[in-house]
Image 1 (cartoon, rainbow, N blue to C red):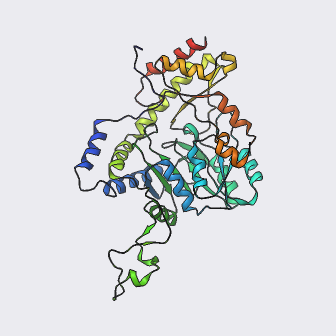
Image 2 (cartoon, helix red, strand yellow; image 1 turned 120 degrees about the horizontal axis):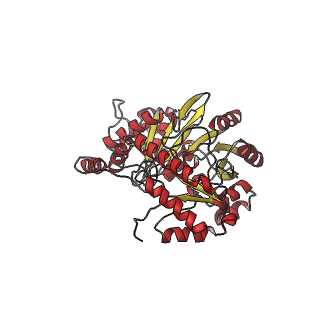
Image 3 (cartoon, rainbow, N blue to C red; image 1 turned 60 degrees about the vertical axis):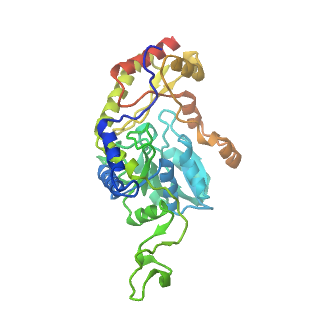
Length: 398
């Protein structure tokens, strides 16, 4: 290979990102210090949510939301079949059951009819819905919120792909994470996402009680709020004042904290969010332009209303028309220095969930999976990189 290898996604780090981390290493705090608080404040400001709670990963964020909602055995949670394993697994962590919903085969998103079908299958046990904003595009959150509120069902947005995305709501553009149509939203800051923290995640919400519970559960379940202490003999001195060292654990939590090191990097990256989102949108527009002559063999996802941040560029490829298998195309792209990935294998097809729930018939998810291929997309790409990817695919499929 004479050209540099193009992965399907990667972080973009500048000198100021490195300096932000170095400053923390020179400071008195490596974890649970001012960088965490500053990052959470900035994220809440960007998403227009009242509260942001950082944590160690997007998976931890999903688990924390299930804990905050007090989901457990006997509860059912609706999750679209096209998502990463973590969305469904977080439901099982707390002992609740997953009900997989089908998706639109042209977008990979759960829509109203898929949600209603899943609710009909699940019955009265549905306690939460976890819509997934795939590749940066959003499901119809206003409709999902309406359906959920009529049935007293909580909504948690898996917005791992969608930091910086906006969607329409009653004529206005709503920032993903503002929780206008949900109880909570979660984000991931893995290096291939819109911003990078190395590993990291966060939850946004407008509910103060949920925010406090999230903070407690990310820190072993420790509680320092003297108003809610149970063991008053240990908690207070003879003058009735709370002992300064005292804390209580009224239920077990987890060590899901994000460190100052990670949050310093995240805060620096948040300052570049607009630039990153704009560049991703420019690259997607170029991909669409170059792929147009290859339709219907290769086409983009059907576009939804809104302004997505585009975490992924997913091409839908008719491999029968192209007369090539997806595995062969991926290998030949790799041989030409181009990375690609499949997002995602339908989770209901995973052996664990098949053994637990049997074989769900979700044709939209299966059709989407059969055609999807994620191609390189990250802000550090050049326009010529897009042209190279498209020309290579064109040469391979003839």
